[in-house]
Length: 587
Image 1 (cartoon, rainbow, N blue to C red):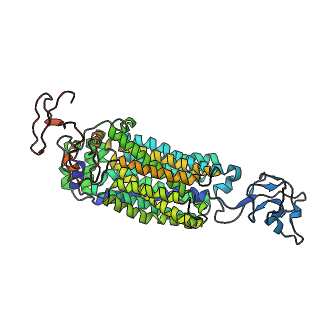
Image 2 (image 1 turned 45 degrees about the horizontal axis):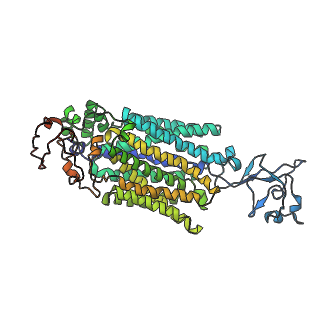
Image 3 (image 1 turned 180 degrees about the horizontal axis):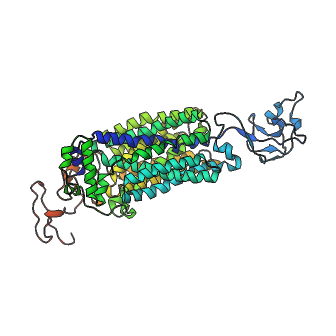
């Protein structure tokens, strides 16, 4: 009996699944708060050098202490000596404001900076003076956080396939809350960066395990809807972040506010039911049976649950060794999937954080920009779920990436008044791409290494997110160069998605063998009725996947109890009208 068929018997998308998805979705509200937090906690206010004090202790006018350009004081230089001649006869600073300081000698801000009151009054920039020569440390701090997510994607992807989804998810909730509080109490920038790194580590575990638990407990027809609901939770989290940042202008208070809820998530996470798919493929059918019976009771199908036995659970698929990173590239089908997923996740995250982490550059109010960037996700993800359901995963994924890349590249040529509009469209397309990627990736990898595969995608996404802030520094070479790099990456990845198989209306693969047996023809596949496969227990009938691939000359060899002596004829399966091809050594 396939797992799809078993879920249908136990209630399909019943009360258990609805409650489970809701419990996993609530923490996702806070993921956006941490990922985009430095838009507010590391905001850069207007600033200038602190003027040199006069010999008699009196204050020196700003106009004669700081060079001016474009009618405002320079940020990183001050005069060696006060330039009193810049004041006109009325004692005003008109001459200085007009920039007529000549070639007076200047020096760096040895006495620190003065920060003007405005949107950002208290940030890590004002606390640790991350301006002028130290301004790159602001981008480095965000890249360190992304590096934590990168390491977490590698680490938790493998550990989850070995130790299970639920236990590691609970630990990640606890670690994220604790490290968030530690970040809020950081006395120095190095301690801040260490805590942010460990926060990113836990963030990867929350994202990966939440996606897999959702994917492995819901029926095939509900996967696109549930994936989109999770995506909308991330979108709503951007509104939560904007509201919290507006209400809490001090960065330590804001950091604390978005971290404390994870202690609550940790407490109720122990009520989660471990993935039965993972338990079966890990050789624990007794625990899988216990979880399935609990699902049946919650869904009001207790009688169906009581009929289950360990033999039924074992029929979901033989316990195969999984979790090995080598399995991602061991066979041709897995190599194609792994490479395609790597392209998609890297380019989506790379371009997304290139746009979303530089709100100040658009010249609009940063709180309003955050709200607009979050609001565009609502129609974008709605359109993505329609495309995923009607056109298929592959067209939706490739189309959203191509649109995002073209919008970013278009920003090079349009006037500044239109840059915000194109950036919003591009950001919406990237949000749709993320939505597609979460669903598509979970369907491409088999259960035995699904977390490892999701970890691969998460790893490449974090590489993209880590590199994205640093690419901004290339603007010193050419102002348009960052946009060129951000735009080309998703266009190239859109082309790479053509090599991935379509997964719409197909059952989740349980083993690597199921992935290799996927039809190689292009185009949408018919919906699977969920009939068991007599060749491989626990897999759907290959007739459900579409017509026989005429380009594959390999004979189909029956497995299990139907296998005959390879030197002799094979017994015809009465349910399978296809003729059996005799097996020959070396064939």
